Length: 77
Length: 353
Image 1: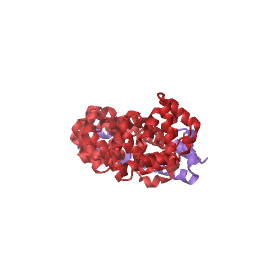
Image 2 (image 1 turned 120 degrees about the vertical axis):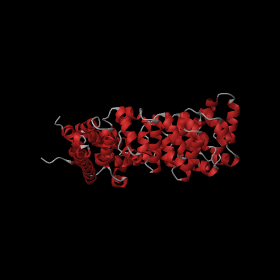
Image 3 (image 1 turned 180 degrees about the horizontal axis):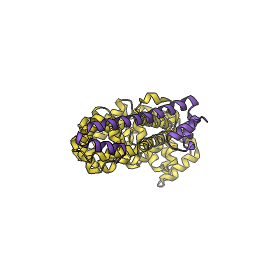
Image 4 (image 1 turned 30 degrees about the vertical axis):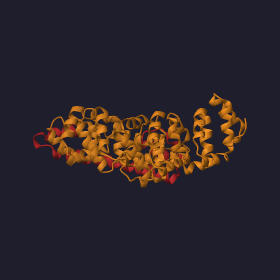
């Protein structure tokens, strides 16, 4: 079942839907959807940046400790 | 105050936009949402951003312990970038964070400061050397990163804060003050501002047409701090004083301002009550009714006898002084010599009581 925009935003930010009342009162549904999209984009961009940074960090460490670094960063150690 | 909510929302939108990596204009539709709700959303967003990659940030932080500091600095600058470096910084032991900050390019540290979460960074910033904090503060202000500096004010100690204040003008101080979250931190800034800087803030607020913002800030301060600020308003030229009083009236901020004004000696009153704007009967009505609400009868009487002839004539048209109940309250408030008080009020055109 598709989430309402309020449910979507509340889920993304791990908050109660009731806490969004000031937003649902002041904004129309298109504005709420725009806000939800911007929050989603920020979270997705963060995840992507972290994933990329971890890969680059592994390459950036000196080769003698690279495999140990990889194990730490990938959670294998 | 009547227009404070929108102004407060605008400032919170700027902070939320920074957290989302957007321009404030992209979130302009939030202007009708109360400031506290936008602030709450930003705090939840910050928590969510940290929480979803918390484990990865901790792993990257632990990597810094197995490579030399120089290598960690290279990883931060080349691989992580400023935003993720800021997230990882919060996971480091304070001593490791200080060592790393020293090894990073100062401009990079200034850049990552925009993504720091003050709540998580407080123990680390407390261990940072003052010269590094001042250098970063200077760089941020040069880039007009007022939102960032305002957010970080709560975790910066007095000494480095004073050193940064020393380097900047009134306009920059006002801009930073606007983005300080907590009134207690705002009070701390006003407390440490030397008189000449406080005067410069008032002058720049008037010059930059930002008195609305300045008056909104006053609203968050203690009566003592408000009194100190108004004491410096009184020293400004008449045009600035007139603009200040006009702004206070337009924003409905009399209650805030009178609590501070009542703490000042009576000799400052002529500079504030004999202005073009105080000929407005509606403004004087607001002052008189607010003074009554605050039980400032004796002070109000001092204000009334400070009026010059032109303003005394204008006061005669103020309806509220035709209310016998108001006149009676004023007479009782003064206490001593009711006869003289009544005579003065009669002379000012008030109703007989």
